[in-house]
Amino acid sequence: MKYALLIYGSEQFVSEMSDEEGKKMLEMHLSTRGKMEASGEFVGSARLEPTHDAITVSADEDGYPLVTDGPFAETKEQFLGYYVVECETIEKAAEYAKGLPLKNHKVEVRPIGWCL
Image (cartoon, rainbow, N blue to C red; front, side):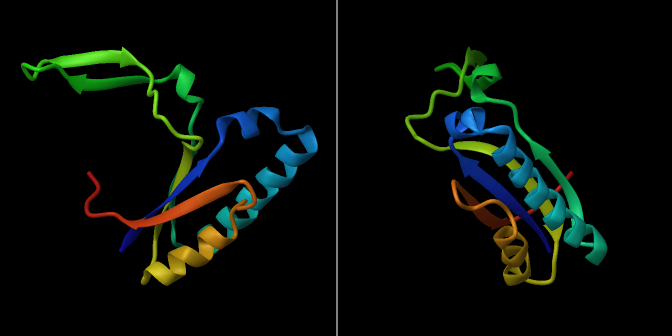
């Protein structure tokens, strides 16, 4: 089964990290990705750009597409990036999540229903 490891954290924290902190965080990502690749369970990953560069597509009252700046979620955490792994169990996917930088982030492990 495929699992998404959804990384949440503060964009402000990421933007204010020192070079040393950024290097340590990248090393953790590369180490964990290397383990995923070595086991053949790595599917893909991406780091998302800040939300101020994003737009949101929704629908107006009549169902017509509406494009706005944002998102403007009322939260201290933003969706920062993700991994997709193909593992036998959610527990195995959680083991990979444990290898990611968790000190200032959270990782949601969620089964993927379908991929196109």
